[in-house]
Length: 187
Image 1 (tube, rainbow, N blue to C red):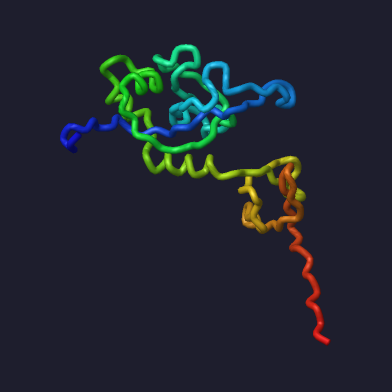
Image 2 (image 1 turned 90 degrees about the vertical axis):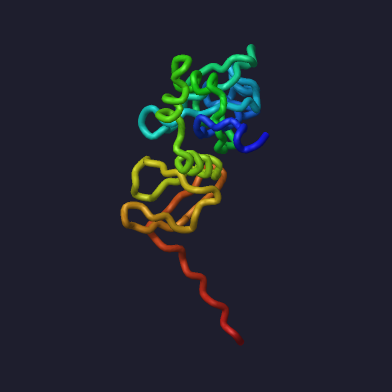
């Protein structure tokens, strides 16, 4: 195809795959392959956050596990997704599923309800960065998300906290700096 005949994208969207295994039930002990509506590895297109800051639930559109020809639109927990990236959207049917637009309104809805490229790329980078929970001494029961492995220093509300302990369950920070090792004396 030449540049003049290539289709023009309707917009940009954040895309991910459904995790191979997802945990459900009390304590996450029930393991399933994929999700009820999506097969493991299925590609889903994520709508920009519609409420709050886009925390743990997101609106997605993708091809249903039972009927791979039609797109469905549902809300799922973002923890069930992996491999976040940014893709151009060319399909009017996908835009209709993602935005609930009527036929013929795809271009208008795509401009208003798909992602700005910079925001989608920023979210993809953030979501692909491994994170762990961190607690700060004297900060009650609040937890913070930090990169995994955790940084040696954490800056919160103008104060600096130092990594005191880290394991598979998370990290703990203290306002006290780490002890200084005495230097060996030369003899």
